[in-house]
Image 1 (cartoon, rainbow, N blue to C red):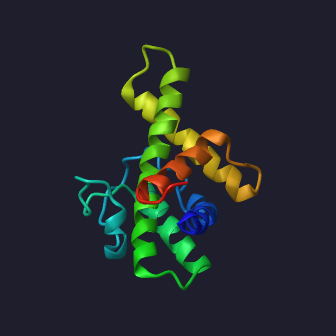
Image 2 (image 1 turned 180 degrees about the horizontal axis):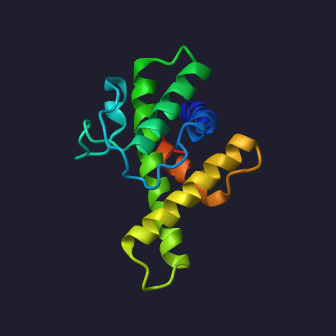
Length: 160
């Protein structure tokens, strides 16, 4: 069973490079801008309660890059692995956004508005994306742990 984890971790990390390249477009401005429908094959990546017709553009791009990048890298994925990948990609996006918002909350003045916190978090997310596109960034332990936790959470019966 640890072989499944060994397959999933490189799969998610490989997808990560592609997904960050697709994570944001210049001028987006926030995590919630331009809501619209997500592709039917990506609906399984949404968290409980999310409306598949109102998914923000940055989230749609992230999920598409994550799932497509991994599927293109390892074309013989079986359906069950794809389902796990959807879960890992959805979880990773949600936790990355939370991570950047917490970081921005800690760095900004206590009188900062929620919109200022979101904008700062989004800019940090976008900066990470741009650094990866240039090949100038590596994931720190906190970011790697986000993906590893999502991989573990998607396979609760597999022990590491």
